[in-house]
Length: 425
Image 1 (cartoon, helix red, strand yellow):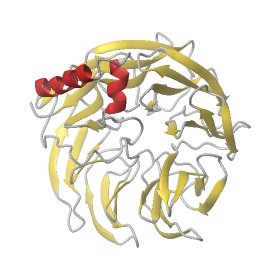
Image 2 (tube, helix red, strand yellow; image 1 turned 120 degrees about the vertical axis):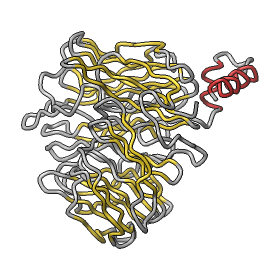
Image 3 (cartoon, helix red, strand yellow; image 1 turned 30 degrees about the vertical axis):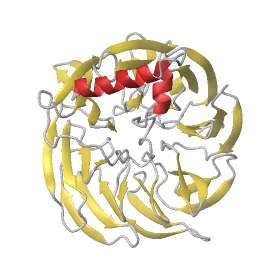
Image 4 (tube, one colour; image 1 turned 180 degrees about the horizontal axis):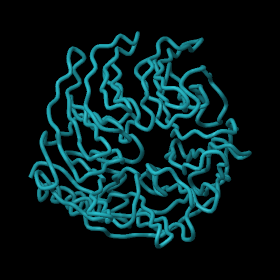
């Protein structure tokens, strides 16, 4: 399979041989990309044609496995024939972007974006390289917490720096948990959050070509961690974000508010999801809660559940909401009214978000176990349990018939991260 796929790549490059940079042209021409957080459709749905083996492990159905330097919880992104992700090295005091070959897994480049002391205090479940990168086919964008600020950087696909911008101060006083929100790339804008208990708390939109500020929206002076997302609701493009006990919709081009509804908890980490005219979000501090908002002329909460899905996002599929709580319980609710279709205990703690591949949901707990169950609202149907190492925090990516997962294995006090490619051998 790998040889056949490599052959198709070579053929494409030959066809594009007249282009000055074939790799860039292939990235633009190929529909087989995973360009940022939650994938090409922003809902964590793999392409409908993707087929992944049901059973796999570190030695079964492995196309390649590559050890990674440093530590990070960012998800891999895929553009053309390359995979990109971020990492940080506390001993070396660096934050870097990695580039790997998609066919072989070879680590092609490690480019240091920031050098110097990393924040001394951070939550034990967080890292200094948690935000997922974003790519528009020509430029690669990273966001890091460095030197008491949020910094955004743009590179070309060969990891050469184009611009770098200090977006805003990020110097939390009360909760020094670090930073984790992924940037949003939309219509020529890079949207970055800096939400903390300080004067620079806000949502910032930068011009993707040069890093200049296009708009800013002030946010309350307290800590929240969610990544923004853009969807189309009732024919209107809407930037959605949760936190501060609200779900908020903004115009992604101007930052002007569309609507705001009291919902969710004070601090949230997951990304807002949607299904038809409903949007959903979950939070966990100071009280647990999952909320559904009907988007209309007068948006309002139509149902809620006392269920905490704090770091992991929800998943919507054809009129149903699937959730995996912090307590390791999987739920299926009807999107329109919250009717519970079923619940089932999986076990473990969760930071990685559920991923849809075909009619299967894949979700990994923090101990490295990935559960696969069917999107069947009538009953819970467990299909497989697959193990990688002993730690998974990052959400995987899917391109074509390959699943890319970031995981770690401990040997005593030694910890090693890997990126693995799962597919039919």
